[in-house]
Every structure is written in C-alpha cells, then in structure tokens.
Length: 122
Image: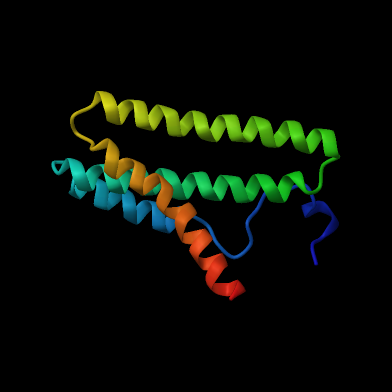
C-alpha cells in the first residue's frame, strides 16, 4: 500500500524509462548517418517516453476529482501529441530521418503493450 504522502505523485512503480531511452539514444547517435535506423531509434525513444508519460498521468488522474482528472488528462494528451507532432514535423522537413521508420518507432511501444495485454488475457 502507498504512504499517505505519495497519493498524488505520478510514479510508475517498478520501471523507469531512463536506461532504455539512454541506450536507444546511443543507438540513434551511432546510426545518425543512416536515415532508416536514425528515424527508428529516435521514434522508439520518443514513443517510450510518451507511453511512460501516459502511465504516469493515469496514475495521478486516478486520485483527482472527476472534472480535475478530465482536464488533467486532456492537457496531458495535448502535450504528448504535441511532442509527437513536433518530432514528425522535424522528420518530414529533415532528410536525416526517415518519417516512416520514425512512425514505426513511435507506435512500437503501444503495439507491444497491446500484444502483451492480449497474450496475458488468453
């Protein structure tokens, strides 16, 4: 059970995206001259951070009042999708990143979570 002071903190227990994102960013720097791989690794890093942000927001919203939680989640979604839009816009403008592989990297954490859920429920 949580301590009373930890109620409103947005924390995902048991996992932090720091090490995986750091490893992915190193792979991005290594493959920077290869647009396909650079787009994939950058997309995957942003996707993991984005998915972790969603989990943290949901855990915090559970403890808020209904209207506060609704506003908080809308604000959070706008911020997260704004980041995705900026990253995709940079990929479409820049020739150093492939937008298709960037999109694959962005959606991979969501696909992995859905597949994991489906495997667990069967």
